Picture 1 (cartoon, rainbow, N blue to C red):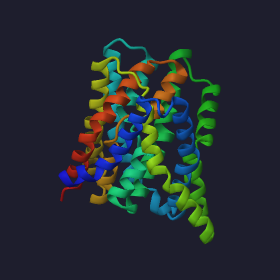
Picture 2 (cartoon, rainbow, N blue to C red; picture 1 turned 90 degrees about the vertical axis):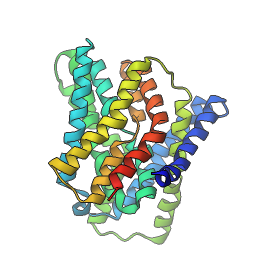
Picture 3 (cartoon, rainbow, N blue to C red; picture 1 turned 60 degrees about the vertical axis):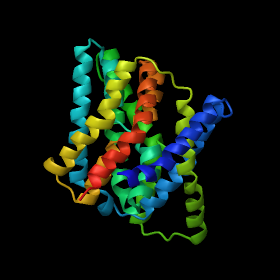
Picture 4 (cartoon, rainbow, N blue to C red; picture 1 turned 135 degrees about the vertical axis):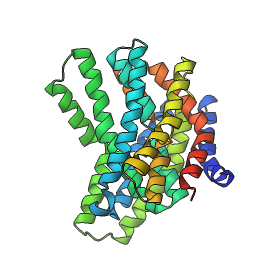
Length: 309
């Protein structure tokens, strides 16, 4: 476990560096926003396209992985939802809290870190986890928020979901990469070098952007943030482990990758959703801050446990 902790430490050190730059205002919120946009639309997209273009749909798609991950994530989502209703929260706020409890930072943190820690063979399962989060749970939160506010599911809501998925650069880059692979198109050396060089900026850029964005996050509702962080860092990998080891058993390596991906802290895009809809943004902000800080210690433990023979 100490070895894994030391291997994950550089990733969190870059997050800390970004946090320091943001706190000292050396890196302004505006600069952070532009760095995030660069990583999201360019560097990470290049990395995902390059990885996906080297995979076939048969290699990527794994029904047991999706089923096991969905079962584990749905249980945690359900627990957070039940606790939210018990506390008297409305549907939109409960949905936002459930999203914090079950959706991790797979895109910005998971793909770069797990590809290095566990090897390039981990990329396929991590991409599938990311795609499941984006397609299933990003759609679910929009449905719950609109249904909770409007009292019904409208065509406008479905249109919003569809447009959001079509315009998401991570989904677009994965789809285009798989299409490139399916058509067996050649990868010219200059194009490959271009993707490799641009994609190499994704790891440090994403980690630095995570840290810089945390610098402007507020820490309120400590008990709720602690509860949501516990759900995300402990309960989520625990129930996903049951899903991929007991309910829908996977091979040891794939199960390790999926469990490790589920151990990541709360995703930053949950805050964007909360801010966009005006639903408990400070609560989400605290959950992201707490879970990211605690994950320095919990993620190595989960990875070490999952990868133990």
